[in-house]
Image (cartoon, rainbow over all chains, first blue to last red; front, side, top):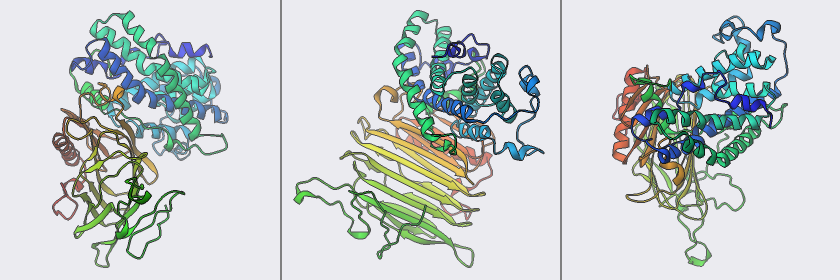
Length: 265
Length: 294
Protein backbone atom coordinates (compact mmCIF):
# COMPACT_ATOMS: atom_id res chain seq x y z
CA UNK A 1 0.00 0.00 0.00
CA UNK A 2 1.21 3.47 -0.83
CA UNK A 3 1.78 5.46 2.40
CA UNK A 4 0.17 8.49 0.75
CA UNK A 5 -3.13 6.63 1.07
CA UNK A 6 -2.85 7.05 4.86
CA UNK A 7 -2.65 10.82 4.39
CA UNK A 8 -5.63 10.85 2.03
CA UNK A 9 -7.80 8.73 4.32
CA UNK A 10 -6.79 10.60 7.48
CA UNK A 11 -9.62 12.65 8.92
CA UNK A 12 -7.00 15.28 9.85
CA UNK A 13 -6.38 16.07 6.18
CA UNK A 14 -7.62 19.67 6.12
CA UNK A 15 -10.25 19.06 3.43
CA UNK A 16 -13.37 19.71 5.47
CA UNK A 17 -14.61 16.12 5.77
CA UNK A 18 -15.26 16.55 9.50
CA UNK A 19 -18.13 18.94 8.76
CA UNK A 20 -20.26 16.19 7.17
CA UNK A 21 -22.15 13.41 8.92
CA UNK A 22 -23.36 11.54 5.82
CA UNK A 23 -26.98 11.54 7.01
CA UNK A 24 -26.20 10.39 10.55
CA UNK A 25 -27.22 13.66 12.18
CA UNK A 26 -30.76 13.47 10.77
CA UNK A 27 -30.95 9.72 11.51
CA UNK A 28 -30.03 10.52 15.12
CA UNK A 29 -32.60 13.32 15.26
CA UNK A 30 -35.33 10.95 14.04
CA UNK A 31 -34.31 8.26 16.51
CA UNK A 32 -33.40 5.74 13.80
CA UNK A 33 -29.80 5.74 15.02
CA UNK A 34 -29.62 5.78 18.83
CA UNK A 35 -26.96 3.32 19.98
CA UNK A 36 -24.02 1.27 18.72
CA UNK A 37 -26.11 -1.58 17.18
CA UNK A 38 -28.36 0.82 15.26
CA UNK A 39 -25.28 2.78 14.16
CA UNK A 40 -23.81 -0.51 12.95
CA UNK A 41 -26.91 -1.17 10.79
CA UNK A 42 -26.75 2.37 9.44
CA UNK A 43 -23.07 2.10 8.54
CA UNK A 44 -23.48 -1.32 6.92
CA UNK A 45 -26.27 0.01 4.71
CA UNK A 46 -24.32 3.17 3.90
CA UNK A 47 -21.14 1.24 3.06
CA UNK A 48 -22.87 -1.14 0.65
CA UNK A 49 -24.88 1.57 -1.14
CA UNK A 50 -23.42 5.09 -1.09
CA UNK A 51 -19.99 3.73 -0.11
CA UNK A 52 -19.87 1.13 -2.87
CA UNK A 53 -21.01 3.77 -5.38
CA UNK A 54 -18.40 6.30 -4.21
CA UNK A 55 -15.72 3.60 -4.34
CA UNK A 56 -16.58 2.67 -7.93
CA UNK A 57 -16.65 6.31 -9.04
CA UNK A 58 -13.38 7.06 -7.22
CA UNK A 59 -11.72 4.07 -8.82
CA UNK A 60 -13.04 5.22 -12.21
CA UNK A 61 -11.59 8.70 -11.66
CA UNK A 62 -8.22 7.28 -10.63
CA UNK A 63 -8.28 5.03 -13.69
CA UNK A 64 -9.18 7.96 -15.92
CA UNK A 65 -6.32 9.95 -14.39
CA UNK A 66 -3.85 7.14 -15.04
CA UNK A 67 -5.03 6.95 -18.67
CA UNK A 68 -5.10 10.69 -19.32
CA UNK A 69 -2.23 11.85 -21.52
CA UNK A 70 -0.39 14.69 -19.87
CA UNK A 71 -1.17 17.85 -21.81
CA UNK A 72 0.71 20.93 -20.66
CA UNK A 73 -1.69 23.34 -19.03
CA UNK A 74 -1.35 27.04 -19.98
CA UNK A 75 0.23 28.08 -16.69
CA UNK A 76 1.59 24.96 -15.05
CA UNK A 77 4.27 26.73 -13.04
CA UNK A 78 1.75 28.79 -11.14
CA UNK A 79 -1.00 26.22 -11.01
CA UNK A 80 0.28 24.35 -7.98
CA UNK A 81 -0.17 27.25 -5.64
CA UNK A 82 -3.05 29.02 -7.33
CA UNK A 83 -6.34 28.98 -5.52
CA UNK A 84 -9.01 26.93 -7.24
CA UNK A 85 -11.43 29.81 -7.18
CA UNK A 86 -9.18 31.56 -9.66
CA UNK A 87 -9.58 28.77 -12.17
CA UNK A 88 -11.48 29.82 -15.27
CA UNK A 89 -15.23 29.34 -15.00
CA UNK A 90 -16.67 26.01 -16.05
CA UNK A 91 -18.15 24.99 -19.30
CA UNK A 92 -21.13 27.26 -19.74
CA UNK A 93 -20.72 27.45 -23.51
CA UNK A 94 -18.07 30.15 -23.37
CA UNK A 95 -15.50 30.83 -26.05
CA UNK A 96 -13.45 27.78 -25.11
CA UNK A 97 -16.38 25.84 -23.72
CA UNK A 98 -16.92 23.62 -26.74
CA UNK A 99 -13.70 21.78 -26.04
CA UNK A 100 -14.35 21.25 -22.32
CA UNK A 101 -17.74 19.74 -23.03
CA UNK A 102 -15.90 16.74 -24.44
CA UNK A 103 -13.48 16.60 -21.51
CA UNK A 104 -13.38 13.16 -19.88
CA UNK A 105 -13.76 14.90 -16.52
CA UNK A 106 -16.99 16.60 -17.54
CA UNK A 107 -18.33 13.28 -18.81
CA UNK A 108 -17.43 11.47 -15.60
CA UNK A 109 -18.82 14.31 -13.50
CA UNK A 110 -22.11 14.07 -15.44
CA UNK A 111 -22.25 10.37 -14.58
CA UNK A 112 -21.82 11.17 -10.87
CA UNK A 113 -24.57 13.78 -11.14
CA UNK A 114 -26.94 11.23 -12.69
CA UNK A 115 -26.24 8.83 -9.80
CA UNK A 116 -26.88 11.44 -7.10
CA UNK A 117 -30.58 12.19 -7.17
CA UNK A 118 -30.74 14.30 -4.00
CA UNK A 119 -29.64 17.94 -4.53
CA UNK A 120 -28.41 18.14 -0.93
CA UNK A 121 -26.10 15.19 -1.56
CA UNK A 122 -24.82 16.70 -4.80
CA UNK A 123 -24.03 19.91 -2.98
CA UNK A 124 -22.28 18.13 -0.10
CA UNK A 125 -20.29 16.07 -2.60
CA UNK A 126 -19.20 19.10 -4.64
CA UNK A 127 -18.28 21.09 -1.52
CA UNK A 128 -16.06 18.29 -0.27
CA UNK A 129 -14.67 17.71 -3.76
CA UNK A 130 -13.73 21.36 -4.22
CA UNK A 131 -11.97 21.51 -0.84
CA UNK A 132 -10.12 18.26 -1.43
CA UNK A 133 -9.03 19.39 -4.90
CA UNK A 134 -7.68 22.65 -3.47
CA UNK A 135 -5.70 20.81 -0.78
CA UNK A 136 -4.46 18.10 -3.14
CA UNK A 137 -3.14 20.59 -5.69
CA UNK A 138 -0.91 22.06 -3.02
CA UNK A 139 0.13 18.78 -1.39
CA UNK A 140 0.60 16.71 -4.56
CA UNK A 141 1.03 19.21 -7.42
CA UNK A 142 0.30 17.51 -10.73
CA UNK A 143 -0.90 18.41 -14.18
CA UNK A 144 -3.85 16.02 -13.98
CA UNK A 145 -5.18 17.81 -10.88
CA UNK A 146 -4.73 21.13 -12.71
CA UNK A 147 -6.58 19.77 -15.73
CA UNK A 148 -9.43 18.60 -13.48
CA UNK A 149 -9.61 22.02 -11.78
CA UNK A 150 -9.66 23.72 -15.17
CA UNK A 151 -12.52 21.68 -16.64
CA UNK A 152 -14.53 20.97 -13.44
CA UNK A 153 -13.65 23.54 -10.73
CA UNK A 154 -15.99 21.95 -8.18
CA UNK A 155 -15.89 18.23 -8.97
CA UNK A 156 -17.86 15.63 -7.08
CA UNK A 157 -15.91 14.23 -4.14
CA UNK A 158 -15.24 10.79 -5.67
CA UNK A 159 -13.64 12.42 -8.72
CA UNK A 160 -11.43 14.70 -6.62
CA UNK A 161 -10.53 11.75 -4.39
CA UNK A 162 -9.66 9.46 -7.29
CA UNK A 163 -7.48 12.03 -9.03
CA UNK A 164 -5.83 13.12 -5.76
CA UNK A 165 -5.05 9.49 -4.94
CA UNK A 166 -3.53 9.07 -8.39
CA UNK A 167 -1.46 12.24 -7.97
CA UNK A 168 -0.25 10.92 -4.61
CA UNK A 169 0.89 7.69 -6.24
CA UNK A 170 -1.90 5.35 -5.11
CA UNK A 171 -3.51 2.76 -7.38
CA UNK A 172 -7.18 2.94 -8.45
CA UNK A 173 -8.04 0.06 -6.09
CA UNK A 174 -6.35 1.86 -3.19
CA UNK A 175 -8.32 4.97 -4.11
CA UNK A 176 -11.53 2.88 -3.96
CA UNK A 177 -10.52 1.67 -0.50
CA UNK A 178 -10.07 5.26 0.67
CA UNK A 179 -13.53 6.12 -0.68
CA UNK A 180 -15.16 3.16 1.05
CA UNK A 181 -13.46 4.07 4.32
CA UNK A 182 -14.48 7.71 3.94
CA UNK A 183 -18.11 6.60 3.51
CA UNK A 184 -18.28 5.18 7.04
CA UNK A 185 -15.49 6.80 9.08
CA UNK A 186 -16.97 10.31 8.95
CA UNK A 187 -20.51 9.20 9.87
CA UNK A 188 -19.11 6.98 12.66
CA UNK A 189 -17.21 9.80 14.35
CA UNK A 190 -20.17 12.14 13.82
CA UNK A 191 -22.35 9.64 15.71
CA UNK A 192 -19.84 9.61 18.59
CA UNK A 193 -20.18 13.37 18.88
CA UNK A 194 -23.95 13.46 18.43
CA UNK A 195 -24.86 10.60 20.76
CA UNK A 196 -21.92 10.63 23.15
CA UNK A 197 -21.19 7.01 22.24
CA UNK A 198 -18.14 5.21 23.57
CA UNK A 199 -15.51 6.06 20.93
CA UNK A 200 -13.70 2.77 21.52
CA UNK A 201 -16.88 0.78 20.88
CA UNK A 202 -17.44 2.72 17.65
CA UNK A 203 -13.87 2.11 16.52
CA UNK A 204 -14.34 -1.59 17.25
CA UNK A 205 -17.33 -1.34 14.92
CA UNK A 206 -15.20 0.21 12.20
CA UNK A 207 -12.56 -2.49 12.71
CA UNK A 208 -15.24 -5.15 12.23
CA UNK A 209 -16.09 -3.59 8.86
CA UNK A 210 -12.58 -4.07 7.45
CA UNK A 211 -13.44 -7.25 5.49
CA UNK A 212 -16.41 -5.38 3.99
CA UNK A 213 -14.14 -2.46 3.07
CA UNK A 214 -11.78 -4.79 1.24
CA UNK A 215 -14.65 -6.47 -0.61
CA UNK A 216 -16.33 -3.19 -1.55
CA UNK A 217 -13.05 -1.76 -2.86
CA UNK A 218 -12.30 -4.89 -4.88
CA UNK A 219 -15.78 -4.93 -6.44
CA UNK A 220 -15.59 -1.21 -7.15
CA UNK A 221 -12.25 -1.59 -8.86
CA UNK A 222 -13.55 -4.52 -10.89
CA UNK A 223 -16.54 -2.44 -12.00
CA UNK A 224 -14.30 0.48 -13.00
CA UNK A 225 -11.85 -1.66 -14.96
CA UNK A 226 -14.73 -3.45 -16.67
CA UNK A 227 -16.07 -0.09 -17.81
CA UNK A 228 -12.65 1.12 -18.92
CA UNK A 229 -10.56 -1.96 -19.70
CA UNK A 230 -7.80 -0.27 -21.72
CA UNK A 231 -6.58 3.29 -22.35
CA UNK A 232 -7.15 3.06 -26.10
CA UNK A 233 -10.82 2.14 -25.64
CA UNK A 234 -13.52 4.71 -24.88
CA UNK A 235 -14.67 4.38 -21.25
CA UNK A 236 -18.20 3.05 -20.81
CA UNK A 237 -18.96 4.91 -17.58
CA UNK A 238 -22.68 4.36 -18.13
CA UNK A 239 -22.05 0.74 -17.11
CA UNK A 240 -20.70 1.73 -13.68
CA UNK A 241 -22.81 0.79 -10.66
CA UNK A 242 -25.53 3.22 -9.58
CA UNK A 243 -26.37 2.03 -6.05
CA UNK A 244 -28.89 4.21 -4.33
CA UNK A 245 -30.21 4.33 -0.79
CA UNK A 246 -33.71 5.83 -0.59
CA UNK A 247 -33.47 6.51 3.15
CA UNK A 248 -30.19 8.42 2.71
CA UNK A 249 -31.85 10.58 0.02
CA UNK A 250 -34.69 11.39 2.41
CA UNK A 251 -32.33 12.07 5.33
CA UNK A 252 -30.19 14.37 3.17
CA UNK A 253 -33.14 16.53 2.14
CA UNK A 254 -34.66 16.53 5.63
CA UNK A 255 -31.30 17.69 6.97
CA UNK A 256 -30.96 20.43 4.37
CA UNK A 257 -34.30 21.83 5.52
CA UNK A 258 -33.69 21.45 9.24
CA UNK A 259 -33.28 24.66 11.21
CA UNK A 260 -30.74 23.45 13.75
CA UNK A 261 -27.76 21.57 12.41
CA UNK A 262 -24.35 20.69 13.78
CA UNK A 263 -23.08 19.18 10.51
CA UNK A 264 -23.37 20.52 6.97
CA UNK A 265 -24.80 17.24 5.69
CA UNK B 1 -31.73 -1.90 -30.82
CA UNK B 2 -32.97 -3.39 -34.10
CA UNK B 3 -36.62 -4.26 -34.34
CA UNK B 4 -37.21 -7.94 -33.74
CA UNK B 5 -39.03 -9.81 -36.51
CA UNK B 6 -42.79 -9.69 -36.31
CA UNK B 7 -44.56 -13.01 -36.39
CA UNK B 8 -47.81 -13.78 -38.23
CA UNK B 9 -49.92 -13.37 -35.11
CA UNK B 10 -48.43 -10.00 -34.41
CA UNK B 11 -46.18 -11.44 -31.77
CA UNK B 12 -42.48 -11.15 -31.95
CA UNK B 13 -39.80 -13.70 -31.32
CA UNK B 14 -36.83 -12.55 -29.30
CA UNK B 15 -33.59 -14.09 -30.48
CA UNK B 16 -32.43 -15.92 -27.40
CA UNK B 17 -29.33 -17.76 -26.38
CA UNK B 18 -29.27 -21.52 -26.74
CA UNK B 19 -31.53 -23.31 -24.33
CA UNK B 20 -34.15 -20.61 -24.39
CA UNK B 21 -37.64 -21.69 -25.30
CA UNK B 22 -39.04 -18.92 -27.44
CA UNK B 23 -42.78 -18.77 -27.10
CA UNK B 24 -44.83 -16.18 -28.86
CA UNK B 25 -48.39 -15.45 -29.72
CA UNK B 26 -51.45 -17.17 -28.37
CA UNK B 27 -49.76 -20.54 -28.09
CA UNK B 28 -47.29 -19.35 -25.55
CA UNK B 29 -48.64 -20.90 -22.40
CA UNK B 30 -47.12 -22.13 -19.23
CA UNK B 31 -45.81 -25.44 -20.57
CA UNK B 32 -44.64 -28.35 -18.53
CA UNK B 33 -41.78 -30.40 -19.79
CA UNK B 34 -40.68 -33.92 -18.89
CA UNK B 35 -43.98 -35.59 -19.70
CA UNK B 36 -46.04 -33.60 -17.28
CA UNK B 37 -43.94 -34.36 -14.25
CA UNK B 38 -44.48 -30.80 -13.20
CA UNK B 39 -41.11 -29.35 -14.09
CA UNK B 40 -41.92 -26.25 -16.07
CA UNK B 41 -39.91 -24.60 -18.75
CA UNK B 42 -38.84 -21.04 -18.30
CA UNK B 43 -40.75 -18.60 -20.44
CA UNK B 44 -39.21 -16.27 -22.97
CA UNK B 45 -41.52 -13.50 -24.08
CA UNK B 46 -40.96 -10.25 -25.95
CA UNK B 47 -43.87 -7.84 -26.27
CA UNK B 48 -43.93 -4.44 -27.92
CA UNK B 49 -46.08 -1.38 -28.27
CA UNK B 50 -45.45 1.49 -30.67
CA UNK B 51 -47.32 4.64 -31.62
CA UNK B 52 -47.32 6.59 -34.84
CA UNK B 53 -48.68 9.94 -35.90
CA UNK B 54 -51.69 9.90 -38.21
CA UNK B 55 -51.96 12.32 -41.12
CA UNK B 56 -54.33 14.50 -39.12
CA UNK B 57 -51.88 14.67 -36.22
CA UNK B 58 -53.50 12.18 -33.86
CA UNK B 59 -51.82 9.31 -32.04
CA UNK B 60 -52.36 5.87 -33.49
CA UNK B 61 -51.29 2.79 -31.55
CA UNK B 62 -49.76 1.28 -34.64
CA UNK B 63 -48.22 -1.80 -33.17
CA UNK B 64 -49.39 -3.96 -30.31
CA UNK B 65 -47.45 -7.19 -30.08
CA UNK B 66 -48.43 -9.38 -27.16
CA UNK B 67 -46.37 -12.29 -25.96
CA UNK B 68 -47.95 -14.06 -22.99
CA UNK B 69 -47.61 -13.59 -20.13
CA UNK B 70 -47.24 -10.01 -21.41
CA UNK B 71 -50.54 -9.35 -23.12
CA UNK B 72 -51.31 -5.82 -24.27
CA UNK B 73 -54.83 -4.47 -24.75
CA UNK B 74 -55.73 -1.09 -26.16
CA UNK B 75 -58.22 0.50 -23.76
CA UNK B 76 -58.45 4.02 -25.18
CA UNK B 77 -57.36 6.14 -28.13
CA UNK B 78 -53.81 6.25 -26.77
CA UNK B 79 -54.13 4.03 -23.72
CA UNK B 80 -52.77 0.50 -23.44
CA UNK B 81 -52.99 -1.87 -20.50
CA UNK B 82 -50.80 -4.83 -19.69
CA UNK B 83 -52.98 -7.82 -18.89
CA UNK B 84 -51.21 -10.73 -17.27
CA UNK B 85 -52.32 -13.92 -18.99
CA UNK B 86 -50.19 -16.24 -16.89
CA UNK B 87 -48.84 -16.26 -13.36
CA UNK B 88 -45.48 -14.84 -12.66
CA UNK B 89 -42.90 -14.12 -13.76
CA UNK B 90 -41.43 -17.22 -12.16
CA UNK B 91 -37.76 -17.94 -11.66
CA UNK B 92 -36.02 -18.49 -14.99
CA UNK B 93 -38.54 -16.45 -17.01
CA UNK B 94 -37.13 -13.72 -19.20
CA UNK B 95 -39.62 -11.10 -20.27
CA UNK B 96 -39.01 -8.04 -22.39
CA UNK B 97 -41.21 -5.13 -23.30
CA UNK B 98 -40.33 -2.57 -25.96
CA UNK B 99 -42.11 0.77 -25.91
CA UNK B 100 -41.74 3.17 -28.83
CA UNK B 101 -43.48 6.52 -28.64
CA UNK B 102 -43.11 8.32 -31.96
CA UNK B 103 -42.43 12.07 -32.04
CA UNK B 104 -45.46 14.21 -31.09
CA UNK B 105 -47.62 11.22 -30.09
CA UNK B 106 -48.98 10.24 -26.68
CA UNK B 107 -49.04 6.87 -24.95
CA UNK B 108 -50.42 5.91 -21.57
CA UNK B 109 -49.33 2.51 -20.40
CA UNK B 110 -50.76 0.86 -17.31
CA UNK B 111 -51.52 -2.60 -16.02
CA UNK B 112 -54.75 -4.10 -14.75
CA UNK B 113 -53.17 -5.86 -11.78
CA UNK B 114 -49.98 -5.98 -9.81
CA UNK B 115 -47.18 -8.29 -10.90
CA UNK B 116 -46.44 -11.11 -8.47
CA UNK B 117 -42.88 -12.34 -8.87
CA UNK B 118 -42.65 -15.98 -7.82
CA UNK B 119 -39.74 -18.30 -7.16
CA UNK B 120 -38.66 -20.91 -9.66
CA UNK B 121 -35.54 -22.28 -11.21
CA UNK B 122 -33.05 -19.48 -11.51
CA UNK B 123 -33.51 -15.76 -11.80
CA UNK B 124 -36.42 -14.07 -13.53
CA UNK B 125 -35.90 -10.93 -15.56
CA UNK B 126 -38.09 -8.11 -16.80
CA UNK B 127 -36.40 -5.78 -19.27
CA UNK B 128 -38.27 -2.68 -20.40
CA UNK B 129 -36.78 -0.57 -23.16
CA UNK B 130 -38.59 2.65 -23.99
CA UNK B 131 -37.82 5.28 -26.60
CA UNK B 132 -39.73 8.54 -26.47
CA UNK B 133 -39.45 10.81 -29.50
CA UNK B 134 -39.18 14.57 -29.67
CA UNK B 135 -42.30 16.26 -28.36
CA UNK B 136 -43.89 12.91 -27.45
CA UNK B 137 -45.63 12.11 -24.17
CA UNK B 138 -45.37 8.86 -22.23
CA UNK B 139 -47.10 8.05 -19.00
CA UNK B 140 -46.03 4.68 -17.54
CA UNK B 141 -47.96 3.80 -14.40
CA UNK B 142 -48.24 0.03 -13.89
CA UNK B 143 -49.48 -1.56 -10.70
CA UNK B 144 -46.76 -2.56 -8.19
CA UNK B 145 -44.35 -5.43 -8.50
CA UNK B 146 -44.75 -7.73 -5.48
CA UNK B 147 -41.75 -9.86 -4.50
CA UNK B 148 -43.03 -13.18 -3.15
CA UNK B 149 -40.83 -15.08 -0.71
CA UNK B 150 -37.98 -16.93 -2.40
CA UNK B 151 -38.15 -15.09 -5.73
CA UNK B 152 -35.01 -13.89 -7.50
CA UNK B 153 -35.79 -11.11 -9.92
CA UNK B 154 -34.09 -8.50 -12.06
CA UNK B 155 -35.99 -5.45 -13.19
CA UNK B 156 -34.17 -3.39 -15.81
CA UNK B 157 -35.52 -0.19 -17.33
CA UNK B 158 -33.79 1.72 -20.12
CA UNK B 159 -35.46 4.94 -21.04
CA UNK B 160 -34.07 6.92 -23.99
CA UNK B 161 -35.61 10.34 -24.53
CA UNK B 162 -35.31 12.82 -27.33
CA UNK B 163 -35.43 16.55 -26.55
CA UNK B 164 -38.85 17.87 -25.46
CA UNK B 165 -40.14 14.43 -24.61
CA UNK B 166 -42.55 14.49 -21.70
CA UNK B 167 -42.47 11.48 -19.41
CA UNK B 168 -43.89 10.24 -16.13
CA UNK B 169 -42.49 6.82 -15.22
CA UNK B 170 -43.60 5.21 -11.96
CA UNK B 171 -42.10 2.10 -10.40
CA UNK B 172 -43.35 0.50 -7.18
CA UNK B 173 -41.89 -2.53 -5.43
CA UNK B 174 -43.60 -4.29 -2.53
CA UNK B 175 -41.49 -6.43 -0.19
CA UNK B 176 -43.50 -9.66 -0.16
CA UNK B 177 -47.19 -10.39 0.24
CA UNK B 178 -48.82 -9.61 3.57
CA UNK B 179 -46.62 -10.75 6.45
CA UNK B 180 -44.14 -12.36 4.08
CA UNK B 181 -40.38 -11.85 3.82
CA UNK B 182 -39.48 -10.69 0.32
CA UNK B 183 -37.42 -12.63 -2.17
CA UNK B 184 -34.51 -10.90 -3.85
CA UNK B 185 -34.84 -8.24 -6.47
CA UNK B 186 -32.25 -6.14 -8.22
CA UNK B 187 -33.69 -3.09 -9.96
CA UNK B 188 -31.80 -0.77 -12.28
CA UNK B 189 -33.21 2.34 -13.94
CA UNK B 190 -31.37 4.42 -16.55
CA UNK B 191 -32.83 7.45 -18.31
CA UNK B 192 -30.96 9.47 -20.89
CA UNK B 193 -31.93 12.47 -22.98
CA UNK B 194 -30.18 12.86 -26.32
CA UNK B 195 -27.56 10.47 -25.00
CA UNK B 196 -26.82 12.46 -21.84
CA UNK B 197 -27.56 10.73 -18.54
CA UNK B 198 -30.46 12.13 -16.50
CA UNK B 199 -30.74 9.50 -13.81
CA UNK B 200 -29.09 6.16 -13.13
CA UNK B 201 -30.20 4.21 -10.07
CA UNK B 202 -30.09 0.68 -8.80
CA UNK B 203 -31.00 -1.03 -5.61
CA UNK B 204 -31.34 -4.49 -4.18
CA UNK B 205 -34.22 -5.73 -2.06
CA UNK B 206 -34.04 -8.93 -0.07
CA UNK B 207 -30.66 -8.74 1.63
CA UNK B 208 -31.69 -8.97 5.30
CA UNK B 209 -28.48 -7.28 6.48
CA UNK B 210 -29.19 -4.21 4.36
CA UNK B 211 -32.99 -3.95 3.96
CA UNK B 212 -33.63 -2.80 7.52
CA UNK B 213 -30.65 -0.45 7.65
CA UNK B 214 -31.77 3.07 8.59
CA UNK B 215 -29.65 4.18 5.60
CA UNK B 216 -31.43 1.98 3.04
CA UNK B 217 -35.13 1.12 3.58
CA UNK B 218 -35.42 1.34 7.37
CA UNK B 219 -38.80 0.08 8.53
CA UNK B 220 -40.41 0.42 5.07
CA UNK B 221 -42.08 -2.50 3.28
CA UNK B 222 -42.36 -0.75 -0.10
CA UNK B 223 -40.08 1.40 -2.18
CA UNK B 224 -41.12 3.49 -5.15
CA UNK B 225 -39.84 6.12 -7.52
CA UNK B 226 -41.40 8.30 -10.17
CA UNK B 227 -39.21 9.87 -12.80
CA UNK B 228 -40.62 13.00 -14.43
CA UNK B 229 -39.15 15.10 -17.21
CA UNK B 230 -40.67 18.15 -15.50
CA UNK B 231 -38.05 19.80 -13.28
CA UNK B 232 -39.30 20.79 -9.84
CA UNK B 233 -38.21 24.27 -8.81
CA UNK B 234 -36.84 23.08 -5.48
CA UNK B 235 -36.33 19.97 -3.44
CA UNK B 236 -39.26 19.07 -1.20
CA UNK B 237 -39.52 16.52 1.54
CA UNK B 238 -42.45 15.16 3.51
CA UNK B 239 -43.03 12.04 5.60
CA UNK B 240 -41.44 9.18 3.61
CA UNK B 241 -41.20 11.03 0.32
CA UNK B 242 -38.78 13.44 -1.32
CA UNK B 243 -39.08 15.45 -4.53
CA UNK B 244 -35.57 15.61 -5.96
CA UNK B 245 -34.77 17.94 -8.88
CA UNK B 246 -32.09 16.19 -10.93
CA UNK B 247 -28.81 17.78 -11.96
CA UNK B 248 -29.31 17.81 -15.74
CA UNK B 249 -33.10 18.12 -15.89
CA UNK B 250 -36.13 16.25 -14.64
CA UNK B 251 -37.24 15.19 -11.18
CA UNK B 252 -37.14 12.00 -9.17
CA UNK B 253 -39.85 11.42 -6.61
CA UNK B 254 -38.51 8.86 -4.15
CA UNK B 255 -40.73 7.27 -1.51
CA UNK B 256 -40.71 4.65 1.22
CA UNK B 257 -43.85 3.35 2.88
CA UNK B 258 -45.35 0.66 5.06
CA UNK B 259 -47.82 -0.54 2.45
CA UNK B 260 -48.70 -0.11 -1.23
CA UNK B 261 -51.56 2.31 -0.61
CA UNK B 262 -49.39 4.64 1.44
CA UNK B 263 -46.61 4.36 -1.16
CA UNK B 264 -48.98 5.32 -3.99
CA UNK B 265 -50.32 8.34 -2.15
CA UNK B 266 -46.80 9.53 -1.29
CA UNK B 267 -45.63 9.17 -4.88
CA UNK B 268 -48.70 10.94 -6.23
CA UNK B 269 -48.17 13.80 -3.78
CA UNK B 270 -44.61 14.13 -5.06
CA UNK B 271 -45.65 13.84 -8.72
CA UNK B 272 -48.16 16.60 -8.25
CA UNK B 273 -45.69 18.83 -6.42
CA UNK B 274 -43.07 18.29 -9.12
CA UNK B 275 -45.52 19.03 -11.92
CA UNK B 276 -47.06 22.12 -10.31
CA UNK B 277 -43.63 23.58 -9.80
CA UNK B 278 -42.39 22.36 -13.12
CA UNK B 279 -43.43 22.95 -16.69
CA UNK B 280 -45.14 19.69 -17.46
CA UNK B 281 -48.68 18.42 -17.64
CA UNK B 282 -48.10 14.72 -18.11
CA UNK B 283 -48.78 14.01 -14.45
CA UNK B 284 -52.38 15.02 -15.03
CA UNK B 285 -52.96 12.51 -17.78
CA UNK B 286 -51.39 13.95 -20.87
CA UNK B 287 -51.81 17.00 -23.02
CA UNK B 288 -55.30 16.22 -24.22
CA UNK B 289 -56.68 16.37 -20.72
CA UNK B 290 -58.13 12.86 -20.76
CA UNK B 291 -58.37 10.89 -17.57
CA UNK B 292 -55.05 9.51 -16.43
CA UNK B 293 -54.32 5.98 -15.43
CA UNK B 294 -54.26 5.54 -11.71
